[in-house]
Length: 339
Picture 1: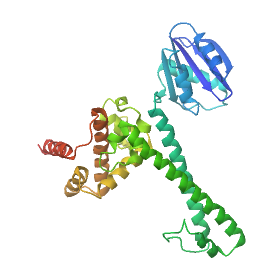
Picture 2: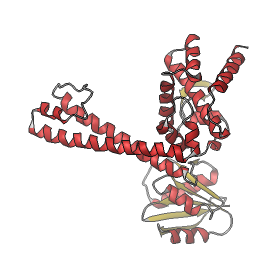
Picture 3: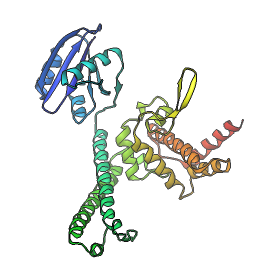
């Protein structure tokens, strides 16, 4: 096996090829064009594994190279301290690939990967909108003006309260920005609703209590395939719903979440809050935990895991959520916990 480290940029890509013993066989810097990249990779004889750092080009590189190597590893890694160069990065990636020390990042094919891009763009809009609202609100707060009116972000009459020509100009621009971002957010939500009709996977997830079109699109766009996870506990870690013990020298040093997708954590916690507004198996599970003495935070965490497990089950089975079936499962689990 030959191990290829690749440091990819929009203009050039730097390669380094190592053998099993760590000896450097060749190095090259080629233009970031399809033909040039394939010419170099195909020119490496024998079995080969190739790794590159996760970034803007990752999905394009994955589709381009997956059939030209025996193993392809988009990855996350931390560069060693010291001067940074493309050649050094390619060397480190190749060496870490050789010894199996890289953390792979999932990539796939098909239309569901397009939903991932849509979800990512939606998250950017939401973050930009939050920042714009905070900046707009700050103009009023620095003058001790009220900001809690229900029409605060939609009524431009509020701008007159600023009573300062410069602040009115700034406020007017921010008010317009908030309005534009709200419209863009609404357009993304309309697309999410269309995806419910178009994609069976998303439609299945919307049958689960607390999960509407937006959350279903987020889950499908990020996860892409439920078969990525051997067990539900792997999914819990990926969604940052659980913590793991830290131990060294026979001593425990608390608990810590592994690196995952914080968006999923927010999705499932938000879904639980939605479930608490109606009568369903998830709400009844939460109430039972509260009766057993758990506080709201712990009960919400436990129910979030149950909801995540339900998502995997519904997605893999291809059948809509059944509240009665979920209730029987919760009762059986309760009997096992008390026995």
